[in-house]
Length: 149
Image 1 (cartoon, rainbow, N blue to C red):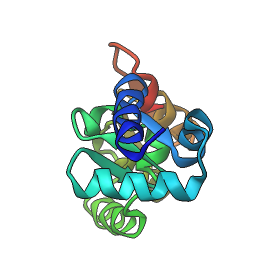
Image 2 (image 1 turned 180 degrees about the horizontal axis):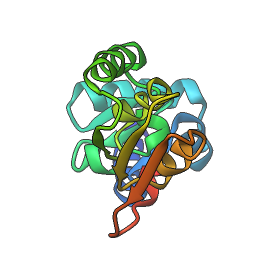
Image 3 (image 1 turned 180 degrees about the vertical axis):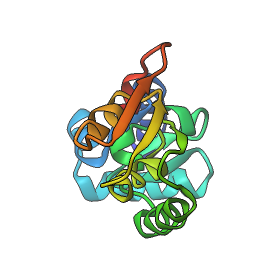
């Protein structure tokens, strides 16, 4: 398969799966991981895809469809700083809402030994908060998106 065909195939696969790792793309296309990395760099520079930690996603719908485990690996230090600052604004007894974002997930360790009520739409957040007996957790209803858990 020539390079241009690989580019098209990579974009087609990303439309189907939303996110793929370098390793998975290499296996699907029967090329080396180094080749995939070069292809992803080209496609990223062309503005067609977004490079992520260990893989890629299409630009269209990139914020909603990149799995949480991938988003969690990006800008980690910045997210931890934001979470630390946000934690200083929360007082015991406050009711807070934590969505399924990777940034707000970094807030959870800062809530240890706190007594708050948390409303969340994320099963992962709800489960992580159950380790703290001082936190009352309420989960909202709605559609479960598999890339957010």
